[in-house]
Amino acid sequence: MISIYFAPMEGITGHIYRNLYQSCFYNIDKYFTPFIVGNRKAGMKARELKDVLPENNPDINIVPQILTADATEFVNTAKRLQLLGYNEVNLNLGCPSGTVVSKGRGAGFLSFPDKLDAFFEEVFEKTQMRVSVKTRLGRDDVSEFDELLSIYCKYPLTELIIHPRSRRELYSGHPHLDFFSLAAQRCPFPVCYNGDIFRVEDYRQIRNQFPEVSRIMIGRGLLANPFLVEQIRASEKEQSAEEEESGKELQKMSKEFLQEFYDRLYDGYRQELSGDKDVLFKLKELWNYQIWMFDDDGKHIKAIRKAKTKTEYDVAVRGLFRECELLEDAGMFYGAR
Image 1: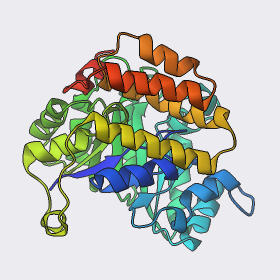
Image 2: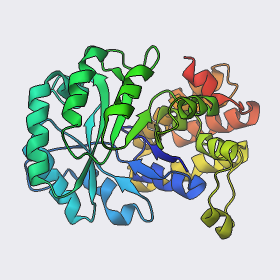
Image 3: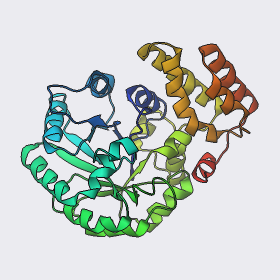
Image 4: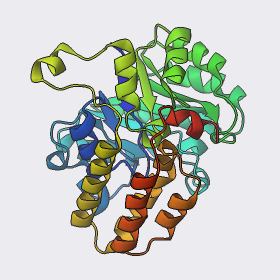
């Protein structure tokens, strides 16, 4: 069976969202946390620690992701996570954010292959944990990937998750599948595909082109359509015997279920955050993706974005669910933006 991972989405896929998603869909094999910024101090930021505490992630397979270009920061942060019970950490070499890249972190670290090589040498000498990597093909150009891949292949990575674009490309154009193919052939460890899976058909294309690849990560596609993995599983009839025995069934797409999901997410944020402003900010971030599930002409998403109070938000969302229908192939519209 193919393993499907939920990509880390900064500001969205924290423990409140992923716990609710898991309770509603239970279809993700591994979640990766939004990145923890590496540091040399005694502890993590309170927000980062809260997100990875085992008691806040019961019965969920998660891997903390670390953002740094400093080996000592990585090792120290990994050790703190190991004390919490984690046996794997993930290095973020893919974040394309300008503020991250300008500090030489995320995809910005890809510009310094010699430093990256030295970084891995120290990390694997001093870290007694499994280490995976999420990467892009390069910072400025995909031609950088050949040298980067040679570095990755020198070390015992648990797996290499590849978004086959350069940082400069952000999310534009098409993924460079030829470079992903190169990695799938050369890597002595498993590779995982990430990028532009918005529909079942996108998933099938990757599976058909790379039948040897058994791991796929989805991020934006799942935010735009939380039913996507259910649709993938149904298309391949991959519901596990364990799920069938427990009486669980693949969740069918419905407005009623989705509205309940949003109501529960709102309640979860209200318990965690202070005031409508912070709660609505979180939800509006998600609606930028989720609106593509509806045949909205722009009226309702505009009202949601303008809402400043819970009452205004409730009126806008209820109007959307009442007046708009779900699109069966929501990902097609989000992916075509």
